[in-house]
Amino acid sequence: MRAAVFYETRDLRVSEIDMPRLIEGHVLLQVEYCGICGTDNLIYNGQCYANTPLILGHEYSGIIIETGKNVNKYKPGMRVVVDPNIFCGKCSYCRKGKVHLCDSLISLGVIKNGGFATHSIVPESNIYECNNDINLDIWAMVEPLACCIHGIGKTGISAGDVVLIFGAGLIGNMMIQLARISGASIIIVSDPLEKRRQYAKQSGADFIIDPLTSDIKDAIQDISAGGADIIIDCSGSGEAQANSLDLVKKGGVILFFGCSPEERRIDLSPFKIFRNEVSIIGSINNPFCHERAIRLIASKTVALGHLITHRFELNKIKEAFNIFGNADTLKIMITPNS
Image (cartoon, rainbow, N blue to C red; front, side):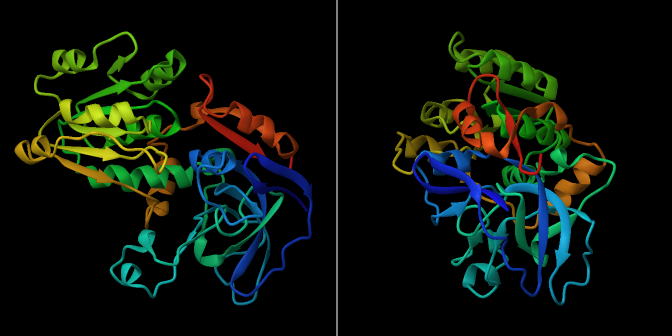
């Protein structure tokens, strides 16, 4: 089979490798679509750990080619999406139901081979059948949508809340739609890129701010006196994170969702956090959220098709990584079998 194997920083090689051996309790997938994630980009650029050499990619959909022994629910020909996170079920976090914090978490595309390949072996427990009426490129976005569902659930958005979102990439555009579903009355989005601000408007944002030309604090005050009830940082921008305390209402919630380099530090006022009773929270992975994401896509409650901006064949995957994060890119899909 063909696969994009990552060896070290910016060393990603497409080559023929042996087909993985199908084992008990697993299925063999023909990978149809696999999206490039911010985590993939950090790994590619040497800013995040991966167990090399490794086939990257963890946002993928495909068709079952073969099933291993004792796989009973799924059959060859079924269209499925992948949950890339395999937890141990034994550590203290798993026993508390916090499987995304598992001490021994194994993530496909980070620790074990993932989806930037023509074929992939996946545990039966980590696949979900998907609706035949919707294209598999849309289904490949179940994983990031599930991450957003987990994150937005932690904010506790209530009906009528004002929500400020930093960053209008793929995740920001998903968060816009989820915030609306959750009851937000006003959704404000800040992004320095004009193209991304246009996508945010299409996804349902009420107000768009260019932080390079506007004073964001004045703009927020004009829109909603007192600030935002909920702030969701999808940008990973240190400046946006540091400014959030000045933009959130008393009793508000700030969610740090976007990927940030591990070594980054920002200045925050403990007094403001204490005095205004502000909650600052993080969110990682997508525990028990895939089925909810699938239902939202199947019902067309969320619209994701307009967020796929580029498609690349597997042999052009380095070109895809080279444009990742450009002004006109949101979701880049790799099509290993095209």
